[in-house]
Length: 364
Image (cartoon, rainbow, N blue to C red):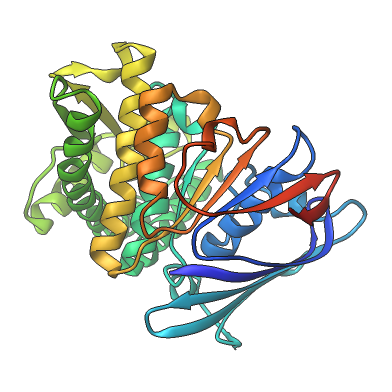
């Protein structure tokens, strides 16, 4: 798949912009703080209905405005597909092929993207929330049922936490009902994650071996707050038992302490926790994961995702740049932000270049 057209209205520092793209590599060239990353953010938001930089959609609107709109024309194996997202202070509206979508899970997945940004280099040693977000964003694109069940889980979790914070005398029967519902959806969320990580590990392991010249063997481990079971009903039971065991602690702290919202992922290189590896090893691992994401999405959807590279070339050494450029030179549409074209000089493909200066876009 590839993005043929993008229209931006009142998003970040862009008032009204309409851009047309080629299926290959598009470079947004300019100095820092001119709006390059805002363009990648717009593409990311069009695909996933959220930003990778902020959790508050209001921050995406232009100064002194209360709405924005993004529109895109996507080319897929099945034909062209118009997508649209409008956000106002009353909420957001999504459209696929001009038809309004009632659920986000019906929208996400039509346009698949893989983002590689400098903050991704913190994935190995950063907070668990970064790794959970990493799973949710990628798994949600290729498995809409995961998004739907994660949304249900988060809804019930919010109900339980609100009740715990209410200060009322706790009704054990009501908590039993919430725990049962939370466990049912939580078990499905965990199962989806385990399958995804198993598939990701298989592909990323090959990439890591290639980058390390067969010196590093990658494994990925899912760390849960409950004993993991392959059987769904056993996993449900384990979650219910854990919730009941921690109930008094949860009542005291007024929050839910077990479940997939607390889980984590660990990466190992030759059985050593990658957190303690060198910076070079960690960067190779992240690059392996990103290249594996591309391949996994392609295997599931039968189409290449769109690759978004936000000023990461300068963060990689020559070997890792070469490996990434090999991916770019394939059949994947790529959008890259950079302050210089130096690291692209040896790339044997045509470039589409847009010069960005203070929110003004000019094709070169």
